[in-house]
Length: 332
Ligand code: NAD
Image (cartoon, rainbow, N blue to C red; front, side, top):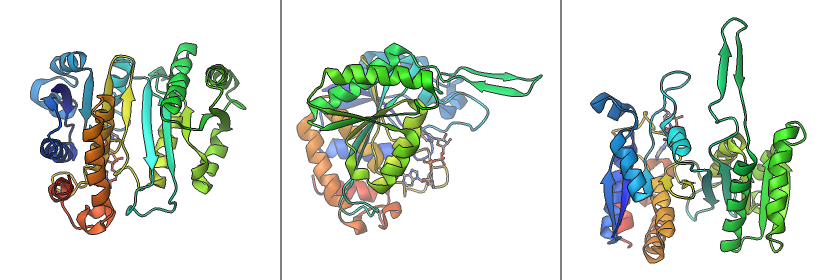
């Protein structure tokens, strides 16, 4: 048995977490959950946004599954997600985007994995506001070691999974210093993988190419802000945030998470789609080397997604969250 930290989150988080737990239990997955939460709900209950018990659990288990957590916009506390990524140096944000049979989209042949640097760039937290001059500065700091780690993680993944191409995305024509550092590390890493095609694109062209011919991309690697935007763009190509997985991976720890938000508009109604969290949980099983369990749950999920009637409302079906989970369980 492997113990994993489970962070249900808030909004629809607890509902989709229950669905994933039910599916894991039905599939006899050898994983036990250690439940800890974070965010406003824990602050209201115990006066801590990221409780010490959660930090201790993460340090002990080194693997976690996390639901969405509400973040106040433009004020209030700093994103719990960003804090956890920085606290544990989870420098790779990994976002697969693959077309699924039954999930209607404009394209039927997308199969890419995006590696977004997760701790630096415009999300370094280096923000200043000069009251007198009314000027805001947000510093996009890149480090050589940070660039090296993310590009090497992308090539290592491509190598392990037999991918043919890694595309680096940047804005080195304008952001010359940051772009040069990132590309320098990308090209150095590429030399160690001569069997993988290394390609680079400027971010604006990349957006156009992705919405015109997404099938040309395999593994994509980029800095934090570009990756944040591109990963949602890629999600849109394959059915949206409700169906894609995400993982934050460092050298010591990995947190797998649904990439959508807490969906306050549908929270508590029992209609949220648990697919994104389930797919993140499947990624987690691969990480734990539980490949048979991962493949069995994935096949049952794919078979359910192929039949719209059995899915939640966002996918055109009529099932509630737990009914959708039961439809998956029936196919295990
Ligand atoms: P959101 O993803 O919560 O919702 C956007 C739209 O998608 C809504 O209409 C919602 O109902 C729908 N939706 C999202 N997930 C769904 C699901 N699983 N099934 C069915 N429909 C789903 O985005 P938002 O409204 O911009 O953000 C709400 C809150 O979530 C904010 O506080 C934001 O900061 C936070 N957030 C958290 C994370 C995270 O914890 N990883 C990520 C993004 C946003």
